[in-house]
Length: 315
Image 1 (spheres, one colour):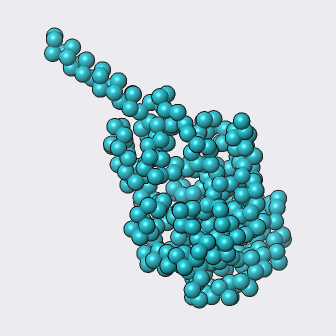
Image 2 (image 1 turned 90 degrees about the vertical axis):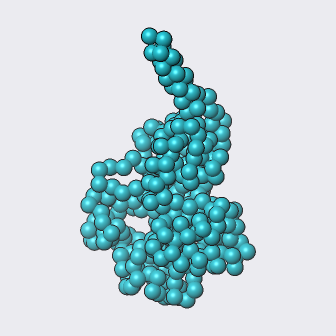
Image 3 (image 1 turned 180 degrees about the vertical axis):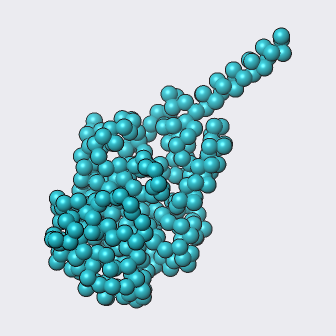
């Protein structure tokens, strides 16, 4: 009988220790809620039956503005709406630049043709980035003619917004692209590497090797570190990145920050979807985030979420 009570007491103490170590009741949120704007202010699109071959410019919702993703005006509009960081997509070009553009080819959004990284920046500047957008199956093209010459280089983006933060999305799986990007950035006085984060597969992991303190992530890293945190996070151990498990939300957030890691909430996954940078895009989903959340929130609709976040940030 005595042995049973000893075991019960030990289990009670262990449970109590787990509670103290992981409860958010004893953690005080620090900092401010931050917003990550995906591609700047842009035109969202229907997401049913998407695959890698889908031309999303052909399935946008009816336009409510004239901004085109990954352009300087769209980034400025995102920052004006309350974004703290903008996610941009990059491709190396054959003439030594890095073009800021989402698609693997230019065929969908522009009047041009070809794989983006197999083209020169000189050619890419001639294209109309609004050429292929349609909300009615091709009957009208409301943005056609409005995106001529708007594709920027990464250099132009960083020089245009010298104090702003960016999440750089590698579009390829070519490891040496990270080496090329780092050399490109180091030759640029305005780059300020501390404000940059990196997303993708092999290039992002290579960037972490080249810059050990850089913030990098990708699907594989997220999944590997999620498993690690689920196994060991209960006593405060943090790998490179963790998912929302032990100590959620504030204790978890404090642990991630102590490990030089940002926590950014993305939209809940629906069946069949893959993890990504997808956004929290409507008032109902944003309202489900705890009012005292002091981490990041990713959105595809910064023009909607920015004002809602401003209300929470107000004293």
